[in-house]
Structures are given as structure tokens and as C-alpha cells.
Amino acid sequence: MDEDTDRTSPSAPAVSGGPPPPRDRLRAFLREGPPFGPTRPGFWRSPIRGPWTTSVLGAVLLVGLTLVTVTGLLSYAAYNPDLTPVNDKTPDKGLLGFYLFPWPTDPPWLYRLTQGIHVTLGIVLVPVLLAKLWSVIPLFFTWPPVRSAAHALERLSLLCLVGGALFVFATGLLNVQLEYVFPGSFYVLHFYGSWVFLGGFVVHIATKAPTMVRALREGPPSSGESPGGAPPGDTGLVTPDPAPATLSRGGLLGMVGLGSLTLLAVTVGQSIGGPLRATALLAPRGRSGDGPNGFPVNNTAARARIGADDVGDDWRLTVRGGGREAVLSREELLALPQHRAALPIACVEGWSTENQDWSGVRLSDLAGLVGVPGPTGVFVESLQRGGSFTSVGLRANQVGDPRSLLALRVNGADLSLDHGYPARVIVPASPGVHNTKWIGRLTFGELP
Image (tube, rainbow, N blue to C red; front, side, top):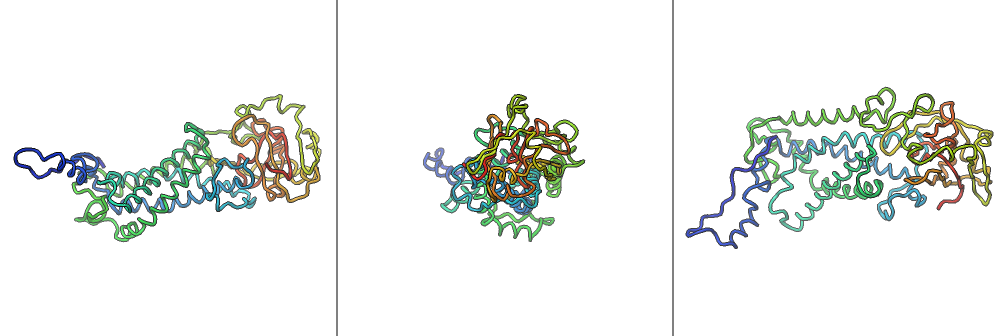
């Protein structure tokens, strides 16, 4: 797949008596481009580029990116951003939130499934995306850059598609690794970048789908035909001066497939769990010790600046609602009716746990304690100092679910400090950051 510079260069007709005048040279440059470099058709010499190669990769991305986009939109909806500004890390979304709906609590593994697919498939598609960009790179250097108003719109959609895809994939991969080297909030950047990409994606599908279908129907070239996958035409993908092949079309697709399978093997375990968790080499978080609390944790007590003084014997939970207030110690909470729920934890980075056996007081019982009848929402506030999601709003359907608990214990033991001791919220099908830890106050029926 080596590239080489075009050994031919355009030449203007010889002008007797000396070089052509500057005006003629300028016209030739505008018409034909630089005499060498990537704008020349012969610069890109790989014999395996062509409509068929590009179409195969495009078909994979069409299916894969559609699924990644749908699960990404569902992930945003799971945060219930239209419930309260506290939940919404992407202000001024306007019409971009047209599809939002109240996030359900059934099935309880819903967010674990959708976000696991979103992150795992996004990582698996990285080799396919890079190969697709390689296959169409000659089109980025077509000359002249803009031929008409319609061509300018097509180029703009291509910029949104390629730029948006690279930006969204880059920020997503960095978020999975908890590397926030980009300026600003991940949620805001990823959200708006995704909509830029989606706009370019839709336009690209609408304009290129017929070409892709035709190329796939015709199949790869047989012997004697153009090595790029179709007779040379106006696609700009087939080189007029192919270099000796160093890799076949099947070899290229096999290499891309092997790369994707390798990324799947070192990623999927963080979502599936069980024995495969040991193979999740790209998952940056490990277990929180051994025993009943020995499952992964995202935000540690040290990172949240939670110390012994915050959760010692003087800790109290304040429950408010309907003009009433109750202040409860942990012992008083343990004296209330205790309930159990087997629920996983699933986070935006794609990792999740198997079901853990939580026990504690139902959120609906705590609402009744201050005389707030259901259904009602709740505003949850953590003792955490700084960072994102120190407070969250939960919908009435989440509070009313009998599996939604103010958890005090897990797997038969007290919560560890990293898992939210002395009390945390656990809600079925909710993103991990909404299962707030180190609870200080619950306010029922009032959301900011």
C-alpha cells in the first residue's frame, strides 16, 4: 500500500521564445493544480484502492456507526436531562433534545446493555474507520478544491463527517481511559461533536448510498479489470499509475478484521464481566479490594475528598419534603424496614458489574417518612466536594420502583468507603453517576 509521488507533472504547451507569461501560469495552476504532490492523480498509487474496497468498509461503518449513534442518544436520554438543569451537562441543547423521554427502570440491565454496546462497538470500529479514511484519502485532495456550489456543500458535509468522527472517537476513547486532556467538559464536547458528525453522516449516506450499492453488487474486480475494484471513472479512487501490490484487497480486509477482533477481546470483558473481565486490558479501573465490596469503582473516596470526619459517628442523613424534615443516623436507618435488590452498576465509560446484592431503605419509604405521597421525584445531594454529579435529580418512576434503595449494605457487608459508606443511592437501569454515593440530603417533591 506504499504511496509514491507522481513521476509525471503537468506541462503547459511550450511557448517559443521563453516561459509562458504569469497570467497563463496562474490559469494553468488554477486549472491543473500544483505540478506535484497529493493533488496529482498519480500520487496515490495503491492498486487496492477503489469503489469496491471503499464500499465494503463503508457498509460495515454504516451498520456499526448507526448502532453506535442510537446507543449514544439513548445514553444521553438515560441521564434524564430534561428533568432538571442539575442533570444536564449540555446546556442550550434546544432542538437537539427533541427525542428525550423518561428513562425507564425496566429491564434493570438496560443501561448496562446500551452503554456496553456503545463503547465496545465504538472501540471495535476504530480500525475500520481508519481503513475507510485511508481508502478515500485521494478525494480529500481533489483539484480544484471546490467546483460548484453543490460541490462546496458536499465538501462541507465531508468535513463534518470526517472531522466529527475523529473528534467523537478521540474524546470517547480518552473518556474510557479517564484521560481528560481536552479543554472543557467531556459531556458537552462529545454531545455537540456527535451532532456535527451525525449531520455529515446523514448527508453522506444520502449522496453515496447508490454508489456503494452498485459497487457491492458488481463485486471485486476480476483479473484484467482495474485493480482498485471498478473501471476508472469519476470516483477519483482508482489510480491511473498503480504501484506493485504489497497487499491484496482480502489481505487489507483481513488485517482490519483482525485489528477489530483484537480490540474486542481486550475491551468487551469490562461490560460482560465474569472471567472475561481479566481480558479487559483497556479498562483502566480495577477492583476495590476483595470480599463483598470487591467490585470495580469509578470515583474513589480520596478522589472525591471524602474523609473519616465526613462519614463518622456524627454523620446524619437529612430527608426533606412537603415542608417537613427528618434527620436520621445510620443506626436509625438500619432500624427502618430493610429491602434487597440485585442490581448492577453501569457507567458511561462502558464498564459495568454483575448484579450485586444491595440492601437498605426504599426511596419511596423515605418519601413517606416526611409525608410526601408518591409518585414523586427526589433531589439527591452528596457530601462529595467538587467534580461532576455531586447532586442529581431522579424521576418519580425511579423513586417509586421498589428496587430503588438508599443502600446501606452490599453483598451482606457494610458499604466500603469507596462504594459510598455510609449510604448511597442504587436505582435500576440508571447510569452509575446517578447512583450517588456519600449521601447527605434527600429532598422529595422539589427539583431545582
